[in-house]
Amino acid sequence: MNQDFEQSTRLANSDLLPEKDQKWGWYSIFAFWMSDVHSVGGYVFAASLFALGLNGIQVFISLLAGISIVLVFANLMGKPGQKAGVPFPVVARMSFGVFGANIPAIIRGLIAVVWYGIQTFLASSSFIILILYFFPEMASLAEGSFIGLSYLGWVGFSAMWILQGIVFMFGMDMIRKVIDWSGPAIYVAMFALCVYMVDLAGWENISFSLSANNLMGLDAITQMLIAIALVAGYFAGPTLNFSDFSRYCGSYEKLKLGNLLGLPFNFVLFSLFSVVIVSASIPVFGEMITDPVETVKRLDSGFITVLGALTFIFATVGINIVANFVAPAFDFSNVSPQKISFKAGGFIAAFGSVLLTPWNLFNNPEVIHYTVDVLGAMIGPLYGIIIVDYFFIKKGHIDVAALYTESPKGRYWYDNGVNNKSVYALLIAGFVAILATFVFSALANYAIFIGGIVAAVSYRYMMEPERVALQNLNLAKS
Image (cartoon, rainbow, N blue to C red; front, side, top):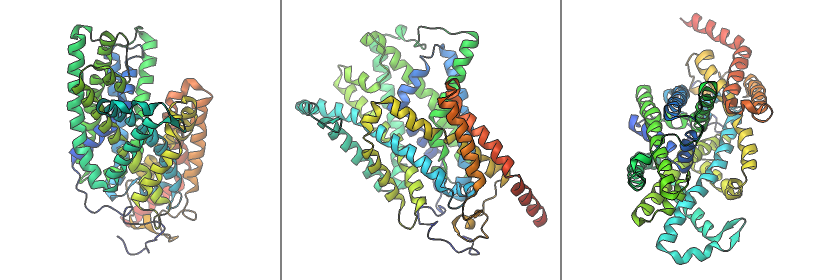
């Protein structure tokens, strides 16, 4: 650390300071994306793309295009974190100011809290299958309820909540070990379920088009663009705070290799498994079932039922810790580093997710739509601001010491610790993205791109004087 600046306790703790032991290799990054892709939500999402009216080739082209966009942004958003060894909220200090970074941190943290609760609730459905398989007499607990959730549901939800808390309590090393092993194990289980379903249905009854419609021409192109945007939007959250994980990677080359294997290859293969299982459900059960938990529940094989339930438990726990626990842990710690540690921030998110009663949220799509979409409308602008600032304004240079100081001479102090220009760009672009989401609904699927572009352009324009000043300073030094 550069000692020219006094390190502020309001900006630093052991969790937010640069990671010195960057021991993650490409495999850990690859496993991170496996954990992020494999979930009940990911399964349903992948299957839904095949129901847009596109044929198999059109869907796979859309999948590759969408996930390639995610790959590009993962590389971009992961670079400053890997270079400096710092998490997302600290990276955001470069563009928003050392205190202004709390704005993007809180936005990302709140989104994670909502989805942490929902994903825990989804994982509890699989756990309940195991409970009833081994202890069928516990079915009586499903009759009573408390705050909208049955007593059996509370047993399942509490078990998943505690399990995730135990994993998180042991820190990032334990999280890395969990994602290193859970991803491959889930693939084995998915393959077994896929083979079993194909054997029941017969390969001749498997179709890679789950829709009765067969779109062509402009209609097909329109749906393909929607599919591409949906893929990019689905991964927008974890890609935004990817520095939370890239900070542990030993080199940028390893990071890019892990992203390449973990995104295009992994996502397309997982989607292939998902659509085969969903397609097989039609001849096996007489109807199309997109919920994998319901699929394993209906199967006669006890082994496959248990294997499937365990698979979706570990899959959902994996994505929840990766996407919705680590992010708010760093984000909330960033708000008050001297009082909130990484672990404390994570448990604040966990307790907050219970207070939201996620089962009620999940059963009320309209509430989810307005809550998540308003917060999500801010994600695109955050991409635009942070990427433009790092690559076009700062030219990839990071003054690490200035990230942790309250000195007015620090590069990221701006105006009392806040870069008002980034806040203005966020508000302008966020307003446009919300209009695209709720008013001009035909553009809703592209709101993240619209917000990102508006923020990038407006921020670049407002920051032109600083860009010129930094360019002149670098020329003077050279």
